Amino acid sequence: MSDARRRPPSSTDVAALAGVSQKTVSRVLNGEPYVTEEVRERVLAAARELGYRRNTAARALHLGRFHRIGVVSIGSSLYGPSSLLVALERQARELGYAFAVAYTGEGAGLTNAVESLLAQGVDAIVVSDPIDDRIDDPIDGGQDLRIDPDVPVLSFRPVPGLDGPRVVVTGASGVDAGRQATEHLLGLGHATVWHVAGPHRWWAARDRARGWREALAAAGAPEQPALEGDWSPASGYAAGRVLAANPRVTAVFAANDDMAIGVLRALAEAGRAVPEEVSVVGMDDIPAAAYLSPPLTTIRQDFEAIARHGLALLAAEIERSPGGPALGDLPAHLVVRRSTAPPAK
Image (cartoon, rainbow, N blue to C red):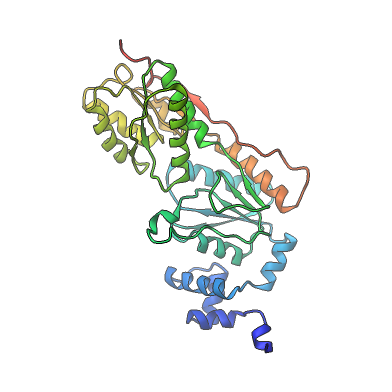
């Protein structure tokens, strides 16, 4: 084999394969602006194909000298993801780490976002709002996210394909949250609970729906088909109109507070009194929840505590410290207000 075949790939090779200049390759790998998304993806794809990574980055990653944590986020303005992102940045800085974010959009380019962060130089990766890219590919289901096994990874829920000796999974269990909401309504005496679910691509939505189903099954309550929304009040309103037209509906668990607000509006327009005729539970405890009419019963997540615990675990993994905090989920809390009551006799 020739020396040319044995030598590691260089940025020149990446540039040639991607059909761009070396300067463009440098801009992409340094996370600089003024590069189109199409060019960025082409360069990162070429780097992956060639197995290219800058030696300085690999060496610094191994020695833990970046003091920077990279976060992959979908860039959502939704209350939960945005609150968690703010909490992560605050906690990272308190631990002495700089903070870098790569946005994927609604599920696009998760692997590219990770590669971009690694190219910039980070000590670890946080996957803050995982959604399932594979659903969109009807042929082969897409590919699992693959991250260098030497890179510590923090995820706030289990994600198929994201595993390894340095993958840490912790957070507030969406399964437990869905179960708590449903058990609260069943405990009030409702025969069953209808569910307005988040988009199925989101692992968080699946977890909350799973908790709902498990609580129904444990109580021997019938499971009705879930109505899928997109986290917005408008989608909650659309689902609420369907539910309001069904006189058998007496209890609803919406997967977030925004959709619960839409459900409340639809019920009010249909003349279905809350909670006298229909009880409603949301999730997130957004600031407006306590000031709705009626005030909304909801599930609260402590995003500061989740970020603090998760990053403490990640920092211990970065430093290979044997004395890190105990792994485990943090509980979600039911906040009972006036949108829930026993069913009318």
